[in-house]
Length: 96
Image (tube, rainbow, N blue to C red; front, side, top):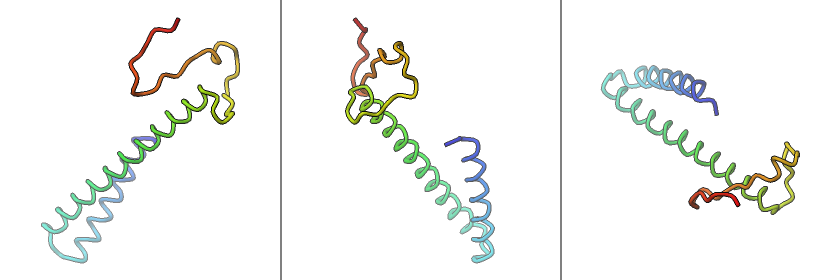
């Protein structure tokens, strides 16, 4: 998810929504509050989408570190194989 592209897309969608709402209702007040509600819902959806991507990435890294499902790393040199992935909710500990 590339943030500037999402921002431009959401702005375009809100403009189209506002034009459509104004054409249907003929009221500037109704158009403004309905567009504001739509903007909040779009932001909520974007936020949830980012959370899902972060969760999946952390889950996949944890599986890869534990060797859970046999997922191979793209970078297979010895140095990257020795890197440990700490869980997101655990405090950082120095490596021995």
